[in-house]
Amino acid sequence: MDPTISHPDSVGRMSEDPDDARVSPSEAAAPTKPQADGEEAPDLDEEGRFRARGTLSYAVVGTYVFLLLFFVYLSRSSFFGTFGWTPYLLLAVTAVFLARYLSTTYTIDDTRLRAWRVLGGRSVPLEEVRAIEYASMRDLVPIGGGLTMGSWGWRGHLYSPSIGEFDSIYTDPVRGLLVTAGAYPLYISPKDPEGFARELSRRVRSYTGPLSKDVGSPGPGRPAQ
Image (cartoon, rainbow, N blue to C red; front, top):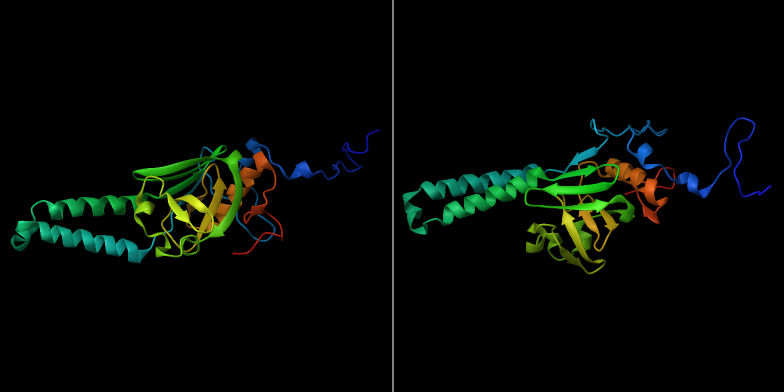
């Protein structure tokens, strides 16, 4: 008998196999049980999708609101009448930027990770994910911390001295995740990076098995932030 083939033992357990770390796509879409260390099961919608909002800052939202009120004042002030349509243009641009910031959302289903915001986004097949790491824009783009014109593009395409070109759909430049997949890595900032990494890792491993870098992998060996 071939010793490499697994057989049930007397209590019905199977012998260990490296492929046991994989989870089927159907199992990945199902809610998980609470972990032994107290981690809660993910909150899934009726279609089994895991959703997370981007981390929002009261300071950032307050700044946008202040600018909106200021441009409204400019548009109605006779003193600034010589500016023509400029205040209205600035008002519209600021409103779009605020909508993009507030609408940033991340969704994981049984096949893809989707990062979305008004006028922008990217979809990543789970089978293409090669690594999940904690990251910050301050480390990726030391000069400016990623606050450049590129970050406002459709995919937020930027260049990092450490990893080269990458995409960024984010609201928090400090606490985020770097998902290496496809042609360019993707920087995201879900509200709960740890919980999001766990759920993303669980679903990715249903396709690829263990990853070389995976902060969401289960067990005591999971890297700390």
